[in-house]
Amino acid sequence: MKGNRILIVAMGRSGGYGLGNWISRELGLKFIHEPMINLLDDSGKGIVTKYLITELEAYKRNPWNGTDMESNIKGYDKRIGLIREGDRECAESQCWAEGNNKWRNYYSISQEWLKENESYITEMEGWVRNKRESLLNVKGLDLIVSYEGIYHRRNDIPKLLEYLKIKEPKYLHLLDTSLRLRDTGLKPKKQLI
Image (cartoon, rainbow, N blue to C red; front, side, top):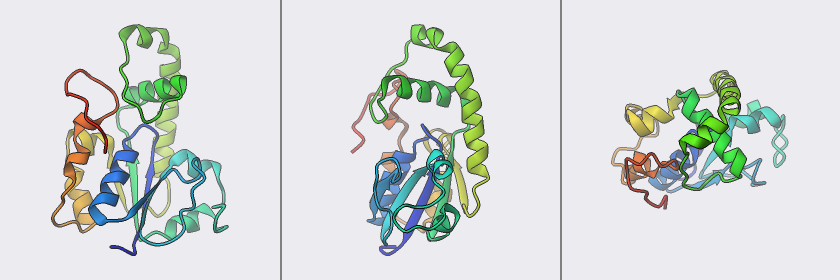
């Protein structure tokens, strides 16, 4: 798969960084994280690219190769969608990250913070549902998996292994729930890499 191009289109706060990192490690490919936000060129071979659904909505054309985003999606050999099923937890995470401008840090949310931000979180739940619907309507995605199916139920991992033709995975520990960014008090924190 060295020359392949693999695409992940993810909702925010859905574990897309972890999924992209895992796929890139398993297949020995370069990982490009949120190319539009981070101003990274995602053309070329041998890459795993993770777009946020909001990037696809905001940009009509890829600034590096000029193609429309639908054609850009078709330019990938494998195309995966990543959703989050739990609206409330996703909304809480999104609100915390936006409010603190910290996207890749471990964090804890107190009951006090939840109470103080209840109306914002409730509003964000609607935004989360909208982004999930938007992602589910992206044309050309071959496989849809979820945060819950990867990191909690783990029933989406065999689907990913089959789809990506990974026969002997070496890095499944990167998909362990103990690596989640939000501290639930249940598992010790581990470094992502």
